[in-house]
Image (cartoon, rainbow, N blue to C red; front, side, top):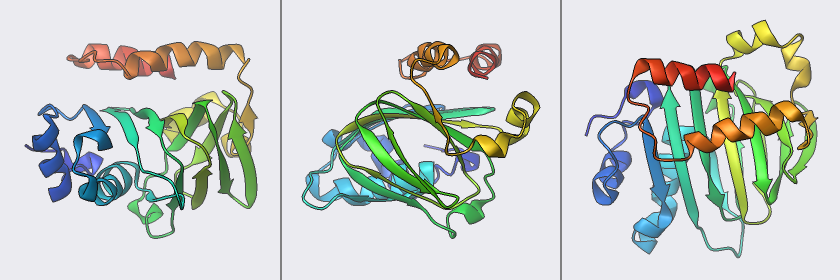
Length: 212
């Protein structure tokens, strides 16, 4: 199984997991579920595959909770997405991890549950269907305090700067759940979580265009 190095999906752990649960050879779409793994391997494989290889985040379960994750990851040119249900977790994107040079922005949505996010000297309680824009080139910490459903879209900072004036000033500002553009975006994101193959470059481009 050859995982594209540009997505960081080339670790030994990822190859072993993909073989174990029958992930497709084309890793434009990947499903990750701790339910499919032996209990003793769930935490290290989640940390290595979903954490360091895919999202570039150090994850730790909240003390006293049972780790359970069911997530779908998409990676197509110009757009990355992870969508799923997560047990309570601490997450940190440290200075060591941001050295990967990824300066994309992340639009994070929380249809259910919530999290506490700290970045750029600010702290935000993210919950109730709202969205928030974050910077992948700055250190971040977050805590999902309850089992939550989260969506994160990785978007090109260069492209977003052509569409949003003073883009960096919008980081860590909540986007209300009743915002019409956000409600429309959520309908596009639902497609990314389904089993549509997005088999052609034209179809991938169409999806990316709709999201932006």
